[in-house]
Image (cartoon, rainbow, N blue to C red; front, side, top):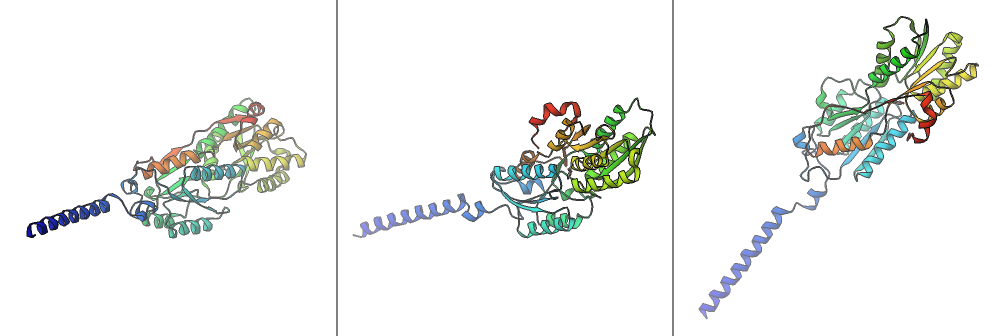
Length: 352
Ligand code: AHR
């Protein structure tokens, strides 16, 4: 009897030990449901690459806030779609905010993304300056910023993970070089009017700089008027009307910082009674479908490409960051230039 009792106790003890062992294994091997499903928190989504690396190697579902400039141009519409689709197609959650070209709206949107504890913020700044404080707030909250399309003029480059966008200065140079070549046999003066983009924005500042750098090398080129058209067709038309009113037939060339303003200006030129593309050379930037249509109609001479379709590349970079890769601070989008004689052939293949 005593022997039987000892055997029984021994069995109970062994079963008990096995159970305790299994429970212990279960706890250490599998994280709680909350741990695995929760988006990266402040501890895992910092700007430091090691902090940002996910345990699964970067294939987790992220919550991404996207603060877009606005809907001012054909280019912007294509860019918004490309980024939105790339984020959702990759299985991430998107929180979108349209700033309607207002800096204060962007600052509010970024603060709201921080409060919502998103994992990453995609940010296309309407202007270059004045974002230090809010970028610092995102950094303090451990949320990496991915600058898309436009840069910020901020000293501390630890405030963003990377900047993916076009080289706007180079676009301005391309426009200038095309004009210099086109006008090489013309004695001059060559009177240019310039429609600038949004005041203080990177593409307006840089496209002006690049173009001026090239044309200022020959003093036959004169920029006789330069004013903002805010990157919109309506403003482009309105400002061109004013240019025509004060300068009339004196204008040889229009350099517009985007195609939408050029298209608006083309309308103004026609209404004034001149032939765009002939009486006035028209140079635009973006290479949107509308520019190809205008070129095919002989109303516009050249457009410098600014490619908005970088959504998939941007999402790859965000995922690479969360997988622990160190990203270059500046990644340029590759671009080309298209002239009137190529327009008809290329128009059907244009995606934006
Ligand atoms: O930042 C890119 C510029 O913004 C595009 O060239 C212009 O069309 C847009 O509004």
